Picture: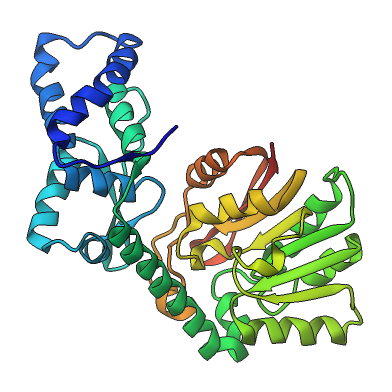
Length: 350
């Protein structure tokens, strides 16, 4: 779907450009009655503003706080709060609490509520809007600040990583289950594997035993050095250690049958982007195994463990994977101590 730029006459453009699609979608559902006309008008009005469309475009796959949105859009907080209130009332956005902060995201449209077809049309069109260059530059800066905070945490806490991670779920809580899942997985070949965010390297030996060539990717040089020392001490020498993130040029020529990422997404600035990067790095029919926290409310994890996000709902991972072109294979939920739950997921490149 081609991306659309925001024009100065967006109030008019909204109906000229989007009305045909909205009409098509509405025709597939129960017709809007007279009693719904006021709600339909309010919903269209909520979307008939260029600033609000930019908000919806930003929230298509990612969550942002009010402060982050203010910085990205270069707008007064009072004005942004006004726009967010209108979008909330129209059920185009929803909120999620992360510790002491409220994060906004696009509302999940289930199709069961009145006017959901119209909401879906608006959100779909907003998702392909091309944002101004200055806005995308400020968005990149926000992602950079999030990533820098995560890197700084692991730089300061590399020596006590295992103790901090053990507060939630260390490798021994899920390592055997993930290793068994890999044994039960029919890979097309066992030539190459990648672990994204290997931490201190606890799971790398499992990959080294199963695959001819292994890569370890981490944006923390301190953690990568710990992983390398750990594997060398155990006598594994088939691993290449790469400093960087999933966009690094060092992996541009590689194609992996297996990718594993354990307890990483809640440290990532833009989790949805990771799924797209994983799909690009996978070989055809390649498989990714993800271990991640389910959504929780234990806010101390932000400071104690450097978590950016308090876990994720299973449906969030499913939607990001589907949007990236990954098909779901398996899902397992593991109960953990201290009230945490882990989800172990497998997806395959289509």
